[in-house]
Amino acid sequence: MPRIVLLVTSPRLPAGLLTAAAWDVVRSAPVLTAAESELTTALRVAGAEVGVPDGPPVPALLDAVAAHGTVVWLAGPAGDESLARELGLRLAREPALAELELMYGSWDPPGARLLDAVAVLDRLLSPGGDPWKRAQTHQSLAGFLLEECYEAYDAISVGDTDALREELGDVLLQVVLHARLAEELPEGERWTVDDVAGGLVDKMIRRNPHVFAGAQAGSLAEITANWERIKQAEKSRDSVLDGIAMSQPALALAAKILERAARVGLNLPLPLPEAQPDAEAALGGTLLAAVAQARAAGLDPETALRRATLAHAESIRAAESSIPRPPA
Image 1 (cartoon, rainbow, N blue to C red):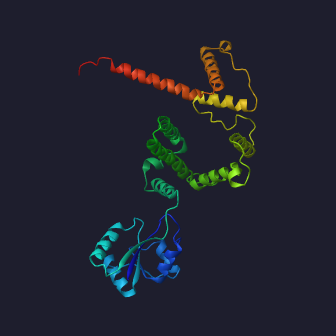
Image 2: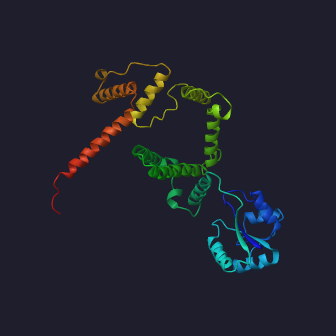
Image 3: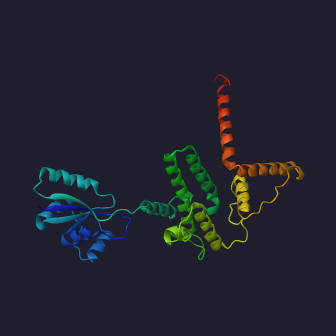
């Protein structure tokens, strides 16, 4: 039975990276396609016969299948759905002409849409792209990065996984945007999104020897301790406080500093509020003591204050609803 093979491939993989079945069919039958591409070049180099019809594709395919018994249509990046629909209707009316077969020559690998994100941001930041994005710097975007992370945190806090997916996309936008901006840095300072991803991969492999190097996993506490030992050897830090993000919210910063100090047995006395030189310093001492008490109780002070504040906000909203509004 004559057949027309609709060959669909992933545009996100290198040209010519096809399954064995796909290579067999393109080498044994003529290939037609709507436009030249890197893939058509790769097929010709491998000995395949590839052509681009001058006229409508369906008549060209039917002529080719009548002459050769089997013909391949190399679909474009969008899959050529309109062509497949037209061809399918024609063959449904005249089934003796040929069988229509769908073949996947390659599939998108996991994470393939990340390549699309990189390509879109490259287009937006290249000449002729978006003027606003092209005018940004790492410094001008710093606040947006924090804002998007907080919005993702909010989605996690309320358990909204759909919102979390969207907010993580906004965080990813910031990551890819910063990486693309870094490509414009002076020679010797430039880096790319591949450098970001490569550094992450290398770090995860180094710090998880129980997964990648055949080391014994042990307990969760042992895995965490091993992570910290590897991290310390990598960073060669002078202080247990090195690496703490000092710009994080004050309650979270206080908890992190106290946790790091306790990790190495440095349980220093806290500043006494009454011994401070002014009211602000005294308040700071009181708040630091409250953070220490929260840690001792196994509580997160940042989460506790957020919970209390949001509950108070709801009380304010309820109170507002009971206040008579002036007539319009």
